[in-house]
Length: 348
Image (cartoon, rainbow, N blue to C red; front, side, top):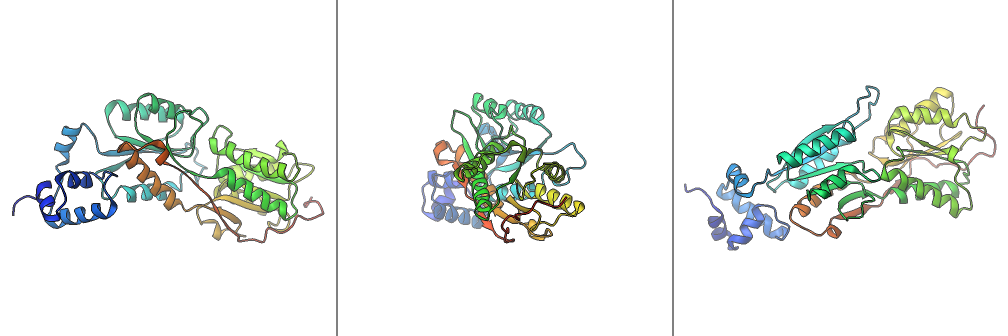
């Protein structure tokens, strides 16, 4: 049997050679229905791309690099737990294209910069995806200077537009704070990520906006910043309990922080839901098993991560940045009544 070629697929399907070629390389200019027809015919005819030859002709690696942050701290059990689901979503988006994933583990920004330099200079990948965007992020500046394609999980304050997918952290923090204010809470704590992260600022802005709308001034004593781990959650609860005017509610940036708060509350003999209400604003659906299960603001990580892969393909195909930016609004999973604040002080 003769080896299938682009010309034989074009003859089989009735599409032009150019359309078949674009469909097989995953170009976004080809309609989804057309791409599926052509890929089905290619599979039927046993078409196989000679990747070695293709790489030589195009001077491309046909790999997408994903930077995965890992912690040096042995106690950060939760750190990176979501990355398997993020990688699965990106991988799913790349199915049917010629691109494969390459995962690079990094421990901090300096490590990430070294890895990015290798990727760009040695041609280890054609594009890169990473998360945890910082104010004046050096990774973004480096990639933009080198004209290297990238997509971020998280917005940035870069003056040059770039592709991103983001959870609307500001809206989620505003909604959570407004919800608690509506239930009578006036002392509301915010357990937030490190302040150099863009989404930490967005969350604090949303929190402050809701308080100001209720004619309340934000209290810096109620804002606790730290790594998004259970250990930070424990420390924040302990610190908050030392305040003379303790909070009746607490908004946590993710489920790991929430778990730490619940653990510390249990150890202190505090009852969540009576002595303090806890809400999480980054839900992986694991918190349904916490005791008690807190109310959460949920964004489907599968949708978010799939968009990262889809946007990466669009960036590689030369799409305008305005077509590769999306903020996803969270929805409330109400697992607790988040009861009105007690008029009496918290336990002593």
